[in-house]
Length: 368
Image 1: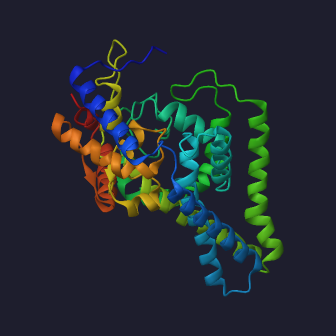
Image 2: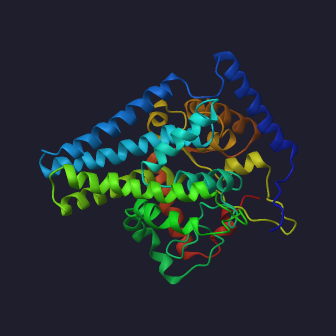
Image 3: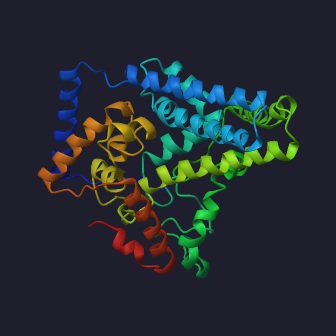
């Protein structure tokens, strides 16, 4: 694989230098170190305790089955919020200066959802963040024929309907992740830009043990202690994953797979069209980026530009950083859009429709 390089541009470098200096000034003036503040630890504790409380309600039973199933849904959503707000920061060592604590909370939060934290960190931190929206270099662009998510992928006749059938497929997102995708990635020696992958034996052993533990806690224990039938337990588990999938997908997928984002291709010389900073900016989509309420829920995923430019900074600082980015973009005449959640979702489905009917759509998605 050829070495991938970013272009050098004095104009683009001036933009990022200004943003970086203003972010440093923001930290100095407010006495921040870039890590999580008390607010992050507080909401993380609330989400974590809510997850535990709802799981206990599932085990104790005694509720009408419809209310009991709501506890399953709540358990899944609370666990997801803990992962988004605590685990994701931990994956980037942005929670604390103690790397061991970051890893512990990252592994705890993601494996509690049934997903492999180790494998997610591999493809997210070591692949996606380096080359977002670069086909063959970004592991988050799934190698699947069912959905055409990149303008550089082959187009098939059935893709013209993908914007219609995608909502049905999205219901199964977390189930596929937990029971298929992780196993598939574990067996790969090559993943996007990653080559000759050799997983540590300890991580492989932990992978299977944690999968077994998740199945035991999520299915066997409720079946043993709740008093509900196997069918009701299985229905609660599946319903939880359906709602978890939708919450994850519709909150996050518009961050890159959007007609507001750009997909870039390597030139013959191995260079991408822009500098590192501009590449991160134009391949990301923000929504409610300056809202503290959106930050409270989505853990900074809504401020994706700030996250990609400053991944080692806790998401609690992203609303302030997003203001700095927006001002600098206007000053340097660089495109920046901050959508609403509804606009981001619509942009995603417009993108799916374009990818399904026009093999040349990628040409318009390039930014020259």
